[in-house]
Length: 299
Image 1: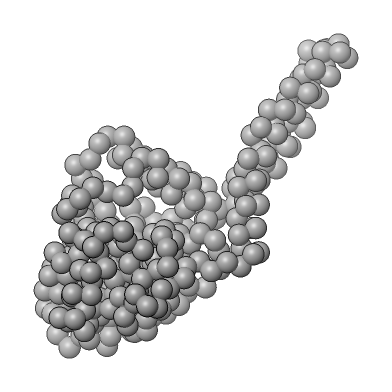
Image 2 (image 1 turned 180 degrees about the vertical axis):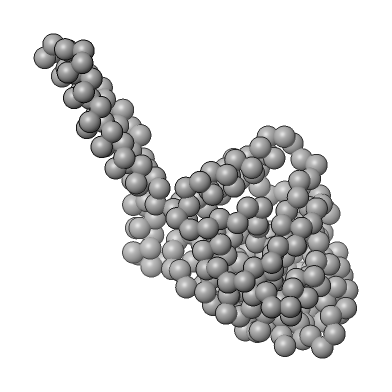
């Protein structure tokens, strides 16, 4: 059996050797398992690629996929999952906030019949605003998603090849791997753990980037905003005439009120529709989700 551990990284030169040692120790503790650590270099600007090639030269089980530019975290995950072949796949971040040692527990769960084992995140020491934002994201996503949203699930996971194949079916401009994990179903097992602070450096996700990522993730898994446009149209169409009849507005005032209501409706709904149209445009032009720089990759 072969396991590919997908590790996206951008500007993580300090973390890469430390992560490798921890992941290697965990994987070598699993008997009779062939494994590769597949670093997905998201066009790093520091010495990350040098550190990856140093590890690759010392250990051929270390593989490298370098993207031609920074295509973003979701694209890096898809690049790793779709480029290498194996029986099982795991996703782990290189900063060690998610402990590589949990791969052993994931693998045991897979052997016991799970098709997807994932880390169930516990709270950690972080600013209250970030914690509040995370909880709000999960609750909002769970409330409007068209399919099941698994609370406190991140990308940190291990899956069978069948699950991997199902995750790669969507052809969208923005793939939310965690949303697809909830959508495809299969037999899932949650393994609780406490998230640690990153080993070196600072997070690449500030509050603004986390907010934008949350919005994109929610939009990837729901058509609720579009349905909301229809709901508002029905509500306004019924409520405004009723208001006019009850209040007996003069014709001049009625026209002014109708114009104001229509304006506010457009202000709310046009941006929502525009966001979805932009996503449709990106799908129609069929630009690749990622491009691999073969000259700086080694598989």
